[in-house]
Length: 166
Image (tube, rainbow, N blue to C red; front, side, top):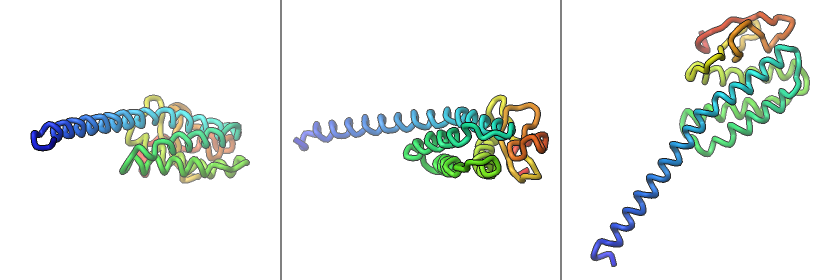
């Protein structure tokens, strides 16, 4: 069976097909992950808007959704992308507070990691903002500053930036 080379050739062909299919699956997953960022940003800007309005309505649920969504990608990524999604998942899972002050503080790590990703992968209509009083970054739809860390007390505190760490 192996002497004539047919079995070996068939094995090589099968192995080649398998490698192509696995590679194709990874390309599809990477494409899905890249497309996930706009949805994550949308959910984060909803949290930002809610906190800026001095509300906590659905903030914990949105954060839990972000954690679940990013957590589901962890088995399909490697390297920096895996680290980024792990950081988002951990930060989102940490948003378990039940009061405005706590949730604002817990939003800082999530807003920071997403701000870094948006600096690397700009999103149309979304800006990165920084508040020196809170020493924190956040994402919001471009326009008037709406600080999620101080809300109505200092709603306009902050400025648009192009990079995290400026």
